[in-house]
Length: 83
Image (cartoon, rainbow, N blue to C red; front, side):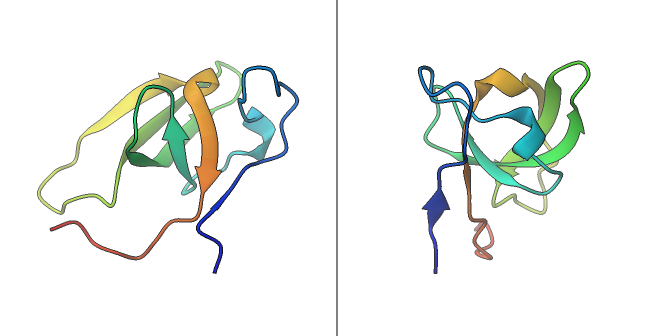
């Protein structure tokens, strides 16, 4: 099983992924964080997305907007639930 996978990107200098490779439900890593997040919304035109921490706790519905340029890596989402 693949744990993580670097996406093909056009901006290798900054190690960023291309917005065209993203999709709703994808798990990603973002700049300045070791946590995993799940994309729950995407606006390619405005270059923003909405994410939540993954795995998410049932009692928490915290989401936030983020510039797509802040995403550094798309990874495999595990099925582990938050405790």
